[in-house]
Length: 170
Image (tube, rainbow, N blue to C red):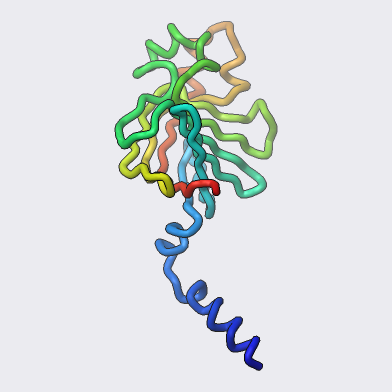
């Protein structure tokens, strides 16, 4: 009986805590790509050699934000600050310093990458990062089409935006 009461005492705070408190324990990420919304109950980060990588997954889908920096500031995502710059720099998409990538269950061709946008880090400590992000991106399949690339980007691009709280990986 003592074990049951002890177990209930240990678990009770989890049943009566709010979503905000849960986010403080595990982190979280939510974002929208086009008309599709995604919510992830856990988000973690690692920092190494001046680079920060935030990752979240729900087994079906995975999202990653990777940026060169370890401070609170505004970072540019992708390979330009507007569509014209992206078209000029599209050959360097795989070399972007700061990027938002989404990997859905559909496969590698359905993966989505930021073309341009911004990442705003409002809190950065050894244990937690908080921020928002927004911009424009495209799927890998659409980006692979070279002929008429400018028209493809204009027709296939999708806006993205989201928020996150990521916890350090111990």
